[in-house]
Length: 397
Image (cartoon, rainbow, N blue to C red; front, side, top):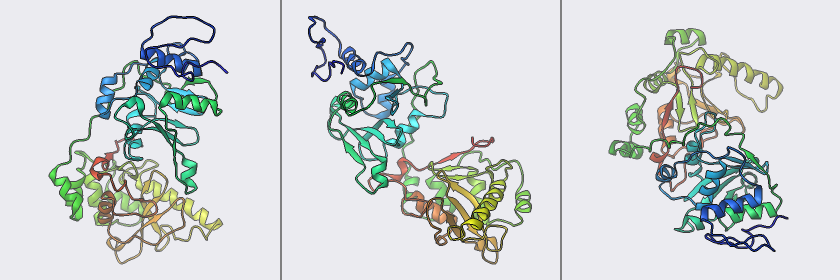
């Protein structure tokens, strides 16, 4: 095994050379951190470094970051360590992975955690910032997805900062290799720019979070976009294609907000669009697919699907593939109850409440159903994370 300055207990400002060599050298803490990391995984590849504006990053986070992480990130950039662990770093990326979104969502996993890495088995590595006022003493914790799936405590607590934790992982079998992270290969030659901070909630939003009903309360809680996108056709075109009119409440909601995604979970396709994910094409495709599954597995697919009498008609879906639908039962579309067709659970009963009522209570953290899970933790303020992200005039934008 390679000799390791870290494992022999070096401290910033000193350097312990390999045994048998007499070297007198004064190194900065940054150099020592990079040396210790290189001793574990090898030196930085050519052109590995990416620019990072640490002052901007830490201002956005509201906290300073550990010096060892900043030294490693500055020298190596985003890494795939041991073909198992991704070490994410602030960088401007043209690809699908967005560092800011990942950090913002990761911080919601538990009070006081900041994510910095992930594994190929869907685990996430964090610093526990509640353990010390000194970021260099923040211990690493890991959310173990398999343990959570099995109903066990998902938090693995290493009790040590980043570099000694990595040394422990190598000693436990992590391969001491590294490469540029495959999720972050198309990098911009400039420092990552943090996204704007969320505006402070207004008194009107606070009031709407606490009480009220109807579309006026919803727009007070989550302001709609200035130019909602519905698609290029008309409501009459949609009604003719579907063979039915739709609930008045839904039409009002879509004309107010347009297509988009609620709180990163519930997606509403363009009602007047014709692309694959617009309301009519999606309802047709999903209905045909469901009937095919029902023919093979009727016990798991018990519903009728539109245009069958009383069939469900999907109009929104979760990022996990659950479908929010109407059950087309009643004298008029305004009488249709809502139902979720879940992707990973048995079929449940119709929901209680109107679309706007359910949406409001879900955003407030008071509603929980398969496909519409309760948002946030009890200690979180919903106004820190709820919102509506409008889609553009191109599919998926």
